Length: 374
Length: 152
Image (cartoon, rainbow over all chains, first blue to last red; front, side, top):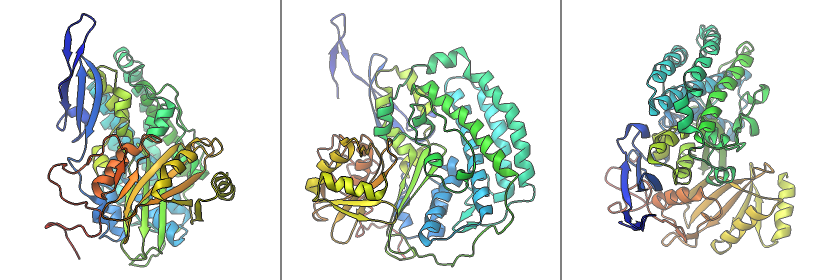
């Protein structure tokens, strides 16, 4: 393990191994990064995953499609609603069920609320990673409003499992539309505070500008998607390129930045919050009347064959692959989780930078560990 | 390109390839020997340029193991599925595509860990989630069993 190199003064330096995690606060979960250092510079990072691997794919081989939805929450818990939707869309496509327009609209609104809540939590944790504790209170203050909306309509604050194949478990709460509208009015005033507090901050700029650069070619090759990939200019927004639910009915901009450093990944996320609000505003007044679900058979059997569904989760492209033999359980189900691919690029991104920058780089990638380990 | 043009183009490059039309994507099935060359062809031909590997799945079928590659071109916005079956289940071997799409590095390690397909020429062929030293077997194999497994 020990390697020796000679520095400019002719002295031999030892390669130094540091373990960050599995219990390090800035990895935001149980991830272990084995870091080889030369002086303070990161030579190589080797991620060690699996501390919370639960074998969700194996479990799903013994679960019905309705039950699988509840496990998708437990991967990226901050994109719970979006992950649920991916399985529902896949089942609906496979059975060729057309869900009511009402369902499509509400799904899209809930998707964007999920994305907002997720980006808010990322923003406050990112500030905290860089030493700005205040951001944590600002972010959580605003996120609370969204969680209250979720609680009222879906009954759960974090892991909703509100989607079922064919629609929803229940109709939305009578207060839903008013509360969402109030929230947008409120958050349009609050979001500029995020920029005032952190974006223009000198320390923040120094710590993120030109730090952790990922080129466009590498972003594509490593499959780094979501705002992390779009910070490098990778046009990978599934909502734009393969629209589902009501995304084909709304106007929004795919936020693209070009430099691929931590700051541009940061900007892409903050900018996306504005776009999410825009999407919600276009839909919230036009939710069509109608049923909140299509009546489905209690036992869902997908016809024999392969199915794939892509959706845009808060951290990137989430995919579900199902190989069905016509049974009520999938023969094989695979979840393409965005964080797993995003993590694989961390060695490429962080090598050559200082170890203190690794915290900023990790924060800008916004990793959720249960989504990596599944 | 739409699926029809895509099929024509690929067949013009290599007429021996086996292409079938699935409900969503074109499916290109290759033997393990041809996998690496076909992958290079898909990535490097400028009209195809499948540069984005968005999903890599390992399946345990009854008689063999199979890896499914979902590919997309960021330039032309078309997608295809590439499939390769191993010769048998006991000694499942496939060449790596890590040198073509870097994301395959972790995904192939996951497939090795859970499905038990070994990728030759992979730079770091170790288990990624489970314990390298004392985990026996590959959990996503259909005949896998241990004392804790819940069956119904």
